Length: 161
Ligand code: 4NP
View 1: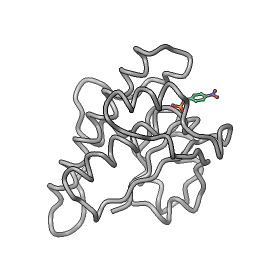
View 2: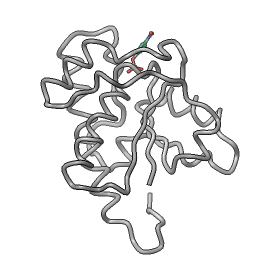
View 3: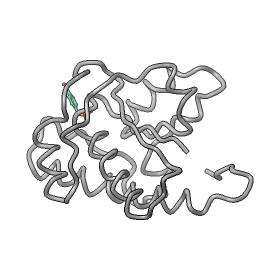
């Protein structure tokens, strides 16, 4: 099972989401799940996550400092089972890039994971520490719910939406 977390810049929400997922997967010893992240833009390709995102993840015991930004590409739709998008813009951009047969692999992460209440992870880039904390709370909840969802998978391998 291969998961790709996607946001706009791949320096705030999606690396935090990748870190939160990696932490849950390691905790539950689910080595059949692999995770990566990407941005719909290539603005920060090759860069580490935003220092505020690194600091926020560190406050929650997760080190994301070694991650590097990259842009989402069409080939990702052949490699990954799910493209987990942070907001509606990310979802629209991802689906526009997708080959026809794989378009449905791009989903809005929070509802797909079964999170109640919030639909999107708001962009914290122009915000402050509390905005990063809110993003962390959402991606961490989504990471836990994602693991639960994948553990409920039936024998067909098809995950109901
Ligand atoms: P992200 O946040 O999509 O959560 O990584 C952003 C990062 C950079 C920019 C916008 C959002 N930017 O405009 O450079």
